[in-house]
Length: 523
Image 1 (cartoon, helix red, strand yellow):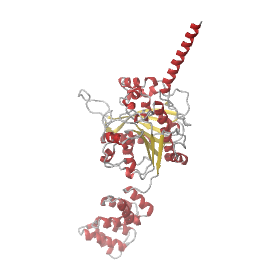
Image 2 (cartoon, helix red, strand yellow):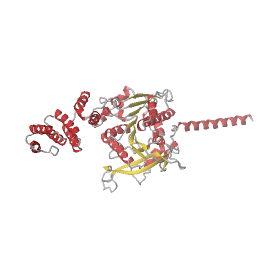
Image 3 (cartoon, rainbow, N blue to C red):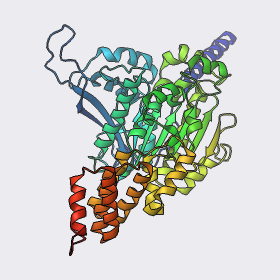
Image 4 (cartoon, one colour):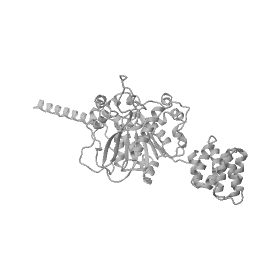
């Protein structure tokens, strides 16, 4: 009897231990525990091409002519506020299965699924939120383009994308691919290819019935967090940027070499999430071209929120990596682990990064004052656990010196202040220069639209900067004549002929103006 009791106790203890171990193992699997928003979430997968770009070679691997589509394939995932349905939501496995037709539309590649499915095997059945092809909810919602990390699939941060959609955003993503290969390349061609993908997706968003195209942000993780900067520098439809440990911080030289990407001129808001403390030794090992400007330091004209996730390593900013067992067992986590922060801490950190992203988007795309106040509070005031994160907020100030801001200032102050506005901008940035052709084209465009006073004022600035500009004097003469200022028109034509005596048009117009009974308004 005693022996039976002991055996029973042992069995119970063993059962309890097995049960505890199973629960503990289950608890280590990534679970996104942030509270969903008021909207059910739908998912649409669209297979489309960017016909403006060539992706595939005209020959196949055997050197034979390839008769297939050579345009750039853009597998597009769209998460959106939907109507409630009884259908089963996507699982982690369902998202992985999208890899099979990432670039081979209609021709699944089963081999492409083996390694990814193996890596997240325990999480394959885990349900997420989105229901495939659920009917969309009525209304229009701000747009967020998600830019994945280096060579990553569109769904690498499906949890974040679903989360944002549940709070009233249309979120659109495509895989991170090189210019002509599925794998991204660590160069200007690669980052520019993803930046063009971002603009392509913005154009696609225009065709959707539930998008508010006046409010657009781009969120990027890692490499996607440099491509979104390139996209914003080249596409003024973008109103805000989110970077989850973005490469814009780690590749300043690449930004400098681009030539047209100027963080010091950006006026849109940016929220940047960093991994745990980054030492000087780390900088020496990983940062490229340290003599180039730091993006976050240069970001002075747009609001900047910097969120330091003290215990997170780079890969933990991806829910795909959070579910990847090879990440936790390999160098991705073990080499870079911060102090004794573990797997469960990474899931909590991810949740808080998602919440701060949502509040940032609410503040700048939905213009929610409460959300902006959230960004300015300390993490403790917002209920974040101690020792998980620190947050700093810096409001943008001043006006960046660009042609666009010069134009805006003239619109605000008046074209009669053109010379003083230009002088002030030159004082702030001595390298700033308006070339003659830009000024003349602008003045001529104003003239054609009957904005004669503005055209004349711009002409005055042009001849001040370029005194030998005969064509500018001629245009000013026409503008004076059209606005009924005969004597000033005559003087301008004479100035034109002083600079260019062979200008037959100016001679003819001056002759007409000086003849008796000349019609001053018909040059």
